[in-house]
Amino acid sequence: MSHVIIYTTASCPYCHAAKALLQKKGIHFTEIDVTDEDDFDALVKKTGWKTVPQIFINEKLIGGYTELTRHISLLTSKT
Image (tube, rainbow, N blue to C red; front, top):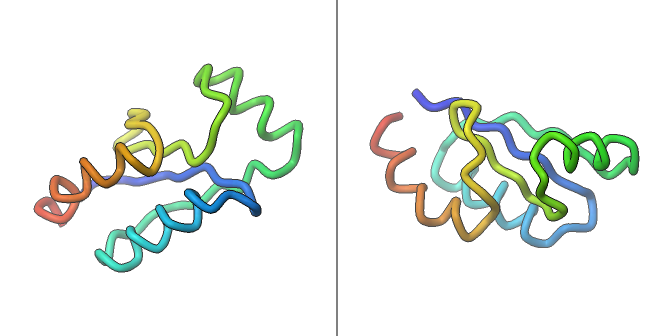
């Protein structure tokens, strides 16, 4: 089974959409809220990306919501 981590902020519509898609597909995920500026800055330093959501599958950054929609069939076939 894949391990999914999603970094989000409270006001991000794509974050909400990504979480809803994962929930709809029955995929367990861990959410890490980076709404706090220091937390967000640490994430940017780690990945180089300045947007959220940032979604990791098995510790590999796959991208954001659009990339998740491309990977969703892979995730659901392995659960």
